[in-house]
Length: 405
Image (tube, rainbow, N blue to C red; front, side, top):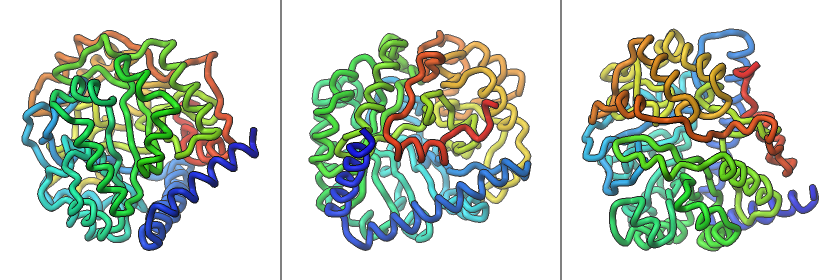
């Protein structure tokens, strides 16, 4: 089993190397791999020594604006809030001062933010993962990302032809996304795919065939995560049940042994125990309104950025709200507290005096209406990792950092 796992990883690595340029591979290795190794060591050392807190990675939603209308999306449909360029630059610079060089760029649809690629390209020492539906990735956009060199598109694929249209609220979405994927491949970008797994897309996307198709299209990795019935159009009936969550975890573990691409998740550790990236402190989120949030779908905050984001380090160092929410989340659930215990989460947020950060201003009403759903925590049914490389990575990067101790 171990030899097969290592062979599979080597084959996936060589395929990625053949599909990209030496320049892009070097930037990926320097900015993402080397700097993240140093950053994770620094992050763990801060936690171990009780030094002021700053997350290991930063998630930034640059705009609420989107060209689709997906069910279960937490972003306000029709919202127009956006960070200023000065704030985006400030977030990145403040983060770099703490050793953080890796950023997830979200929306809405982040490619609707005017000048985004130029902003990211200016930070040549960083690496950016842009979460996109890829419908706006033209050959020119893909070439601009390639020239920047420090951008990897993470293409959201929420189903095949019919399911994409149903989930996305538009027509011809899958084919438009695939044209964007082809543009990424033609530009020799390192790119991946992502999916929010729910009942209606499970049997389309949680398959070996889908992984092979993505690898054939040039994708370097696939990121699976669980659908959260949130936002103004939540469709809770589409949320996974306990057996489906377990089936998804088993599929991920088994496919990691011989998949033709890398399979990513950040919600289970090496032993199969669930974990929340926010509870561990690995990542927090900046919303389009400038709110400094626990995670993207939890749209409440007690602190906001200044005009130049110059207060970011101070907020993370001293926020009682974020520190309290990390502790509360770790004690309440090993999985996603938003899925598993929305009632007590709402009580905590009200007690903290947190305020709404969305354009629609209905998050708390939506949270009050939520009922518990199956999350990542499978307790005694936890499924440990089989692939030794993934086990090593998870133990060294995603092992919980004492949050659940």
